Image (cartoon, rainbow, N blue to C red; front, side, top):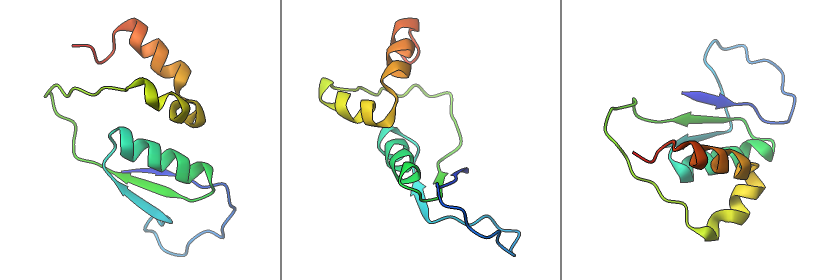
Length: 89
């Protein structure tokens, strides 16, 4: 589980259990984007996903997602990863 803190300053919890405003299930493109946007809006977010596997997964990013990648601040990273061949097999 990954916890992304929000922008607001909250009093520390008296519980030893982590707390968050939102739990996003799945860390694929949609879940990661949702978690990133929610965190940027000040929510603390936990991402829960299955354990990594050696199975190859194919993902594609159509040109229509360019605005969303810009908003997430991820355009440069995607371009770098594409150039070095990450996720291309």
